[in-house]
Amino acid sequence: MFRIALALIVTLTLAGAAAAQQAIRINGPFDPGRLTSSEKRLVQAALAHAGTYDALLDGAWGRGSQGALDQYVRETTGSRTPTWRDVRSLMRGFEAERQGSGWVPVWHPDWQVYHLRPDGILQVQNVGADTRYYTPDASFLLIAQPMNRRPDDLHATFLADARTDRDPYTLRTDTRMITAAQLRGGRHTYLRSDRHNGRWMTHTLVADDANQARLQLVAASFARRNMGDIAPGTGGVIAALLGGSGPALPEPDRPATNGGRGDVSLEDALEGALIGAITGLLNRDRDDRAPVATPAPAPLPDPDRGRRIATGTFVNTTDIVTTTRLDRVCDGVRIAGGAALVRVDVDRDAGVAVYAAPGRSDGWLPLDDGTPRRGDGLALLTRVGRDGDARTTRGRILREITGDGVLLVEAAPDARGAAGAPVLSSEGTLVGLWLEDRAADGLGETVTPDRLARALDGMGVPFRRGGDRRGIGADARSAVVALRCDRR
Image (cartoon, rainbow, N blue to C red; front, side, top):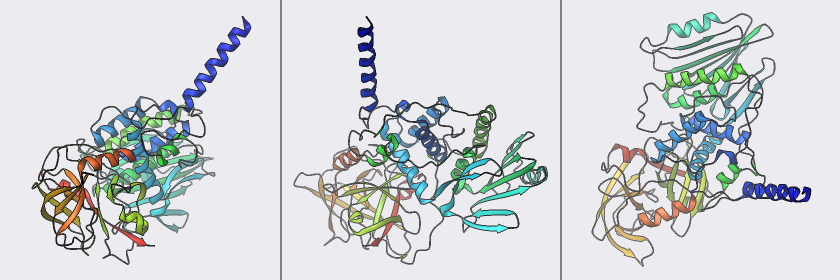
């Protein structure tokens, strides 16, 4: 009997190990049980930056975390069932933000306070005992300020400047003070003061709308113990998500565990609730029908401003599709005059490359759900030239070339940088990508929507077929960006 029981235990153990190592299907439903606690914390950070998560980054996956992911997926794809593909898109976008803005963990041992900070976009200035971190345009400011006495007057100063039609949030205890408000000038502020060994450390954050997501991520990251980095690391499920492509992800090097709340204190748990109130305050003016727009970091100096060598199009809130020409000739790719991008994948047969942008775009284009026909009218939308203004060139489909998903199109883009530009139907849906740089005699090639859909699906990039059919207006133009690179 003992041998039978032992054999049953061994069988169940092996079956459990096999299930843990089973490859993840990219189109399958998201299962948080496949993630470690640190990986869940990383997903929470991505959702906080996306504007849907408003609690602590504690690595515990509950209703709040799942609800934030559900909301993110509804806003970006319209779906109600999150898949691993959706999580991959979320994490690739956040990884672009994490690297592009240089997010680092900060631990103040003298004050026993932890938080995250986007050091890559910040300058530093020491003024007396204060340390100031700020963007060159002062659109994001973080001040670390030690004090010998309770900083009631500092919090009162910000409350006095708060908008009267918006209720600020305040928390006052013997060891902690928090104030969150929207100021009369339109900026958002978050003050947190922590007491340790009889002294106080105050962190003051001030951000404009463009940096509101970064403010929320910093606010959600505060803790009274060292939480470590938020880098994806190697060998786990998140690393497989970021590096994998195709219908199945590579198996992680180690089986994931469910993780748990660990040593989260009651005080920290209560603080998670107040961060929700803060996020609600900051998001009160937001239109919930549209994704939150988180513009790229402050523009960097661009000595080659006029060299816009390609055009790209957002096909969801984070992923930009363009021509593989960039992958062939560039060491790095960035939005002209702005943020660096992270390469996602390429399909050389289709001539399509995908790059992830930091933050989220409020403009993106669905793929056309019809079949292009000879003679159909279309529009080529580019951002070229030194000014980078959107330009529309009308054209028409001549024929399909050899039945391999490539169309011969008559159009005449008049400037270098049209490669990768979206070819749009009259209803504003994406018919394909212009594969040429300069067209000969006004003729060029573009991939069909079906071929483009197969390429995106193979790379695990979320997209939508069909749409609201609102025509080629401001929404379509906001989805198109000029791209530049450094020559090899």
